[in-house]
Length: 256
Figure 1 (tube, rainbow, N blue to C red):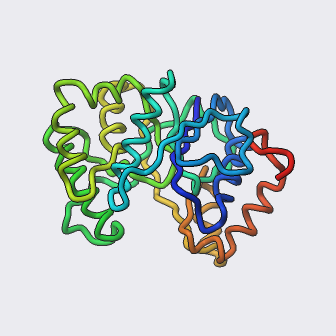
Figure 2 (cartoon, rainbow, N blue to C red; figure 1 turned 180 degrees about the vertical axis):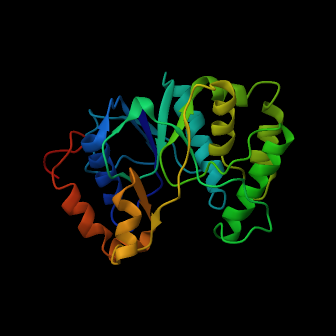
């Protein structure tokens, strides 16, 4: 299974999140295929011969969902990638997994509505609400497919999202809403419909703000992966990542 990273314009930790995420998939991911990185600039430590880099700068400052959509469009247009796991640089595997058996994950019973509480800041909440509205329009499965873990993507389903049935509504929702809509939930819901043989698993979401309590360790001890907030770098996670993944992966240059 191929893995695709969508990255931004740097990070608080000088892109080391990506370094350790790459080490995690190299260490724990069985049946790892090609790795693609889509973003403004390839981080200085990445071996350019070990990945396929697609240059794609952010096109807006206030619609991150639209930036992700644009970068995915570039990926599908410029490569022949078929099925892959979409990752962020702050996603880390924690136990061995078989990428070829990766399921569709969801983290809640239903997509949130605009007046929902506890689903993030205003921009994220509005993005999810507008995503739900689009999905309701086409009677798509409204499970909350937005967990902080790698997400299964498929070229044929991406093409379905742009066909005459969905395309006009998808473009209208993406471009005509305040912050855009997420690609992840429509993708997962359509994959669930198109490929009923795929496993669909409920998973409690894990995104750490720190790693300095028994509760934190309990969260990640039995799960296959976790994600982090920026604040976690200064609160125990950076040291843990260095301990968990001490060895350079094939995706890094030797002088870094």
